Image (cartoon, rainbow over all chains, first blue to last red; front, side, top):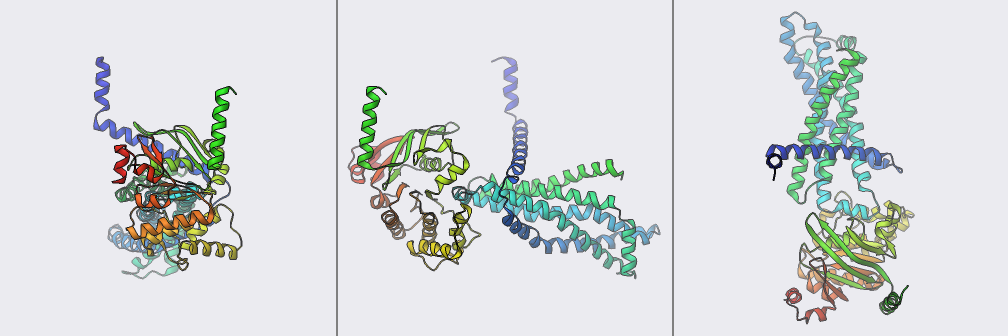
Length: 269
Length: 261
């Protein structure tokens, strides 16, 4: 064995090298999984009724959690921000500041994180247990394309539902803020909302909604990928659900960072 | 065709005449997972109306074999012909068509947890676009449930059923498409001896009523004694021994004897 070969072999046995290789392989696998989603999703016949069923499960059933969180978030954010603005004599800016913050950043990101936790883990666990108990194989021998029936419908549903949940979270959060403003003062509903809409621009709303489509896609993609490739056994199902939440949450922040850069490029923040 | 091939052809043809029409033919099947050579040139012919059991130790490749037959796994080499068609050369539509003729009972039953028993039975009909009117579907479901002795379970969820009942519903779901071949993957595993015997009897009833051919993967000898007309012992990826239950039981080979002790 030459010296170079020896050094190479030594390097490839390092734990860091193995982890890097594993990370790159998984990234490539997830990318291919995403490409397959578009390929299978465009093939006829479309699984419309199952997609609607998933939209109901993913969207409607997540609404209470997203709504309550958004309401508390708007209320608390307002109460916490008031003293600082008061110090600068800018208390009247409170509705505008809170609403812009909620619409641009807090609403979409918090909604996406809640969905990554609730939806990502449930998709990961559901598909993982289906894989382990051979239900996916049973589906295939029943003449069903399991990728299309299980994966495409779930990714489509998360991609469509996370933006809707985010819009509702923004509205509920701003309403929470209105109540927060009125705890230590009296501001009419009309005045509050006129101040909110005076400062909210399309350049705040459009990028914010656009990025939630990507958040939803990422949450569905990771949940489905982890579940679909679950190892054998119940331990594997738990691991799939857990890693679906961790990776999806991390991806939400990475996508948010990219979205901010792109928005800055187009709108100049 | 030279002289030797002609003789071989005649022998094969006579064999078919004596045993019936082959429905599944497996020739020199090889399948590996990394360095683990699971199937190493396995051969099997299943004739119409015949019940063949594949016996072997855990991890010997029995389940891999039947998963290759329905195209859930792809073999590395060798040929699998189902109803005269090479499984590997079929496109998706043709493979789905073949799958309607081959029922598969999974080891874990693989009932869909989120669906009722009725929806579980309806699913293959709906997906394969052979769903008829609501009344016809109801009749088909009722017939399948009556065949397995569970006529009043249509609205139950799989989680409400016992292990034996789940197995029976699995058989009912397999039967609903009226398959010509049924592949049973460890049908009695995890069941008590009485329920296991009931399932074995049910398999025999299905065989007689619908004249199905079956490949039964198992190492439950009491089940095989009831259902198998021929037993193939799969060891080291090849046909290690073959014969009827009594022939193998009386074999002098130590490895074969181990299964009957």
